[in-house]
Structure formats: C-alpha cells, structure tokens
Length: 230
Image 1 (tube, rainbow, N blue to C red):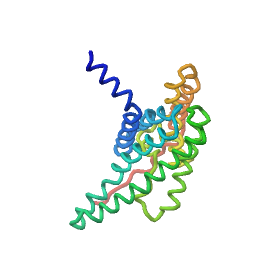
Image 2 (image 1 turned 90 degrees about the vertical axis):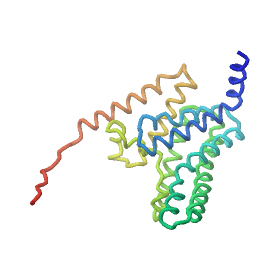
Image 3 (image 1 turned 60 degrees about the horizontal axis):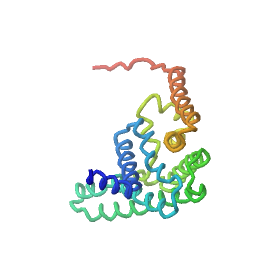
C-alpha cells in the first residue's frame, strides 16, 4: 500500500511532464504511420496540461513536447548522413539545427497562444489554436518551400482514412491541420468541462458525418481501364 501511495505521489508530481511526453509519442506514431484516429486524440494530454496552468508550467510542458517530437521527426538526418557520406557529423549538425529551429517555432506559437488565452481551455482558445497553427504551417511552407524536408503538417494523420480526408478537396492539407487541432481540442474540453460536453460531441459527429456524405456524393468515376500492349 505504501508503494502504491508513493507511485501515485510521484505520478501527480510529474503528471504534466508525463502527459506532454505521451502526446509527443502519440503524435510521432500518428504522423509516421498515418493513424488518423490516434492523430485526433494524441494532443489531448498536452492540451489538458494547459488548462489553468501558469506560464512557467506551459513553457516547460511545451518545450518537452516539442523536443521529443522534433527529435523523432529529424532523426532520419543522422542515419541518412551515415549511409550516404559515411559520417554522422553532417547529419548530426543538420538534425540539431533542425530540432532547435522547430522546437523554438513550435514553442513560441504554443506559448503565445497560452498567453493570449490566459491559460484557459475553452472554445475560444481551441478555435484560436486551430487558426494559429494553420497559419503557422502556411507560413513555414512559404519560408521553407525550397526545403521539402521542412514541410511539416500536423494534419497529415487525417489523410489515412476516407472518413477524415474529404475536406482536403477544398482546403488542402491546411484545413486538415485546422480540424486536427479542433477535434483534439474538442475532446480535451469533453474531459475538462464535462458538464458542457454537448458542443464537443456535436462537432465530432458533424465532422465524421460530413466526411461520410462528401465521400458518398463525390464523383468516383474511375475512367477507362489502361490497356497494356505486350
């Protein structure tokens, strides 16, 4: 019993750091393996840590989340350098520089969002988060358009299912990023504000229903078959 109490005590003390780490690993898996349904919940632990948090807590949680995410995201540079140049040093430098750049960018946007919303998790803050990161991705695409390995999109996991990708026909990857944050935020609100679950639940239902309708009503004509001449 004493060991259980000690474990619970340690968990409560490091709960936010555990949540941030869990979100980062979940995001890595959803992005690398295109798991849309994991992608729609992976940020929930991180967003919960922002609710009623101080600026110092938010900054610590965000830095940890971004460091872990970017470490996995750019680890390929290390292995590619060793494979093609026979040395890991160039890859190590490129990886560290990339991690530093995007950790700073991600942390800055998360921190600005936290300050603007004064640490409150509500519908206004969730919508603003979705808009901020959608704009952030568009901005990065313009700045790094000659560097395709920096084309990073949080909405990528949603391309993994016909029931989550349909809006991309009109808004491209950016609208998927918007819904990525919006749905993660809606689920976070379901947990944080249990008495106000109706809007969050309605949004999720409308999202999947709209995707299903678009899938069923979109012209799926496959064209003429290709004939091969042997």
